[in-house]
Length: 390
Image (cartoon, rainbow, N blue to C red):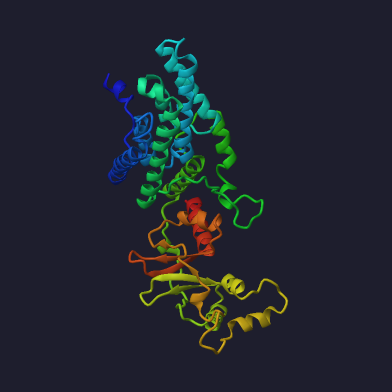
């Protein structure tokens, strides 16, 4: 009997205590500020209603599940307003001819249908529709004004609060649907990580077969699958960290290193990039051969040798718009990894995003090495070779 009842219990939340507190504080501030602003805007209106109960349900989605498709701005504002209009229309058209239970069911069913059509499915919208039916004389007297003023104002204000709070507390909102597999070379080839394993079309086929609304965006779901594959690979073949494969004796530059000096260093050591470090050996940028070509205007091969020599040569004047040092052409804030980062985490960066080299930093964010695509390929080959040998 105990096992039977335990099977009905939901699984434990995956969000840690800090995230739970973040969401709770967001709802507290969001509802409080929405109520204050809505009251200031609507207290003299005909309905004299400035806050509706379904907004509380919207706050749960906006602050606890900001990545959910059901919590995006159009879902919240559109879902609540469309549902309110559907419920109000039912009251006006059938309020005198249908009993309350039938009218309530018709309002909620019509609201869901309307939200599907307008692509703004939002669960609290059902509560908004029901409110228009059982809200009492004040709501019935206000009619469409209740929806187009109170419900809309509450929804817009709460969304604005969610945008501000979520982004200030480290949660990107609104959630922008990303193409996780855009080819950085702008060709029709699939990126390397989806040439083996499950493909996006596999996920689309399964979702179509599942045929249910999921409370997670498609790109987030695909990202979770990809991360799961990476963890499964780590468990099967062992964890190899960046510290195990990185190159440590790396030629580097400083912000003020002259362009000609940096170029000669790259040619001397047969490398295509130089990490740019400050005096504390923290990485502030990275300069590559591509940076030299782009900033030197070397987009054609005609006279490229003369153009490059002119670009590298110092101008000889104190004030010039011409780039003179590495810091003027480097890529700022490059993507880095820590020494304890598993190398499988670098695969999407190098295979899909087009990174050819990842600077490695220690726990104090000091530069300690570099992992290149060659290092990664060799490590993955050796790990599979060792596994096959056993």
